[in-house]
Length: 291
Image (tube, rainbow, N blue to C red):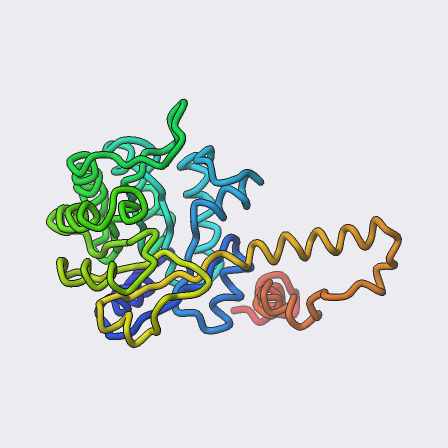
């Protein structure tokens, strides 16, 4: 498939003067819904991938091949430009290079590589970070693994909530110097932190999210914050909807009395039923035109 146009559109967000909020997606239908509703970008997180593929919490038990396969399913389903959280790159710097190669092939438009020590080591009681030097090695490996220059590589750091602002700035400056396209700040919670990092760096910033951003989009845009996540409520809502429906059925509610179900029109739209009907007519019908 051709991933070029969506990567160009993602680059346009980085080059623009707005702050964008991606839609959190986790499978082909959720990606189509986000696209149909007008989200410019989709976001596929490691946590939602673990839930979708394994039904497991976000403990880094998902493998690269499982993650890349789900990324491909999401990208293949439509044309939304997809940002993905590729965690620590599934290992050391050599694994990071392989991660970028696989995710680029899967069709993602942008990916993040973080500097958290993952998975959690035996006996650890708090989040720890790799050294700046190891982080720099991972960023260089990520860039070396990239074949399409349109693919966005963002260096992600969780230092704000672990080692503080001074170390965060040092990491951001070191990662920027490797040539990454953007910096992802996990745990940013106030304007002062973001303003300081914005002053110390020159490339676009992404913020991990929360349901209540601490500034408006104009302020973010003025400080080069191009993407702010809003959390991953859609998959949580989907879990609740499935649970509620199954419980109602188990408790004896007749199928005809269930509430909260999608209309036939919505199901047809998100499954692209019209396209399949047209392809069936064109390719399988004996009445379709021919030479």
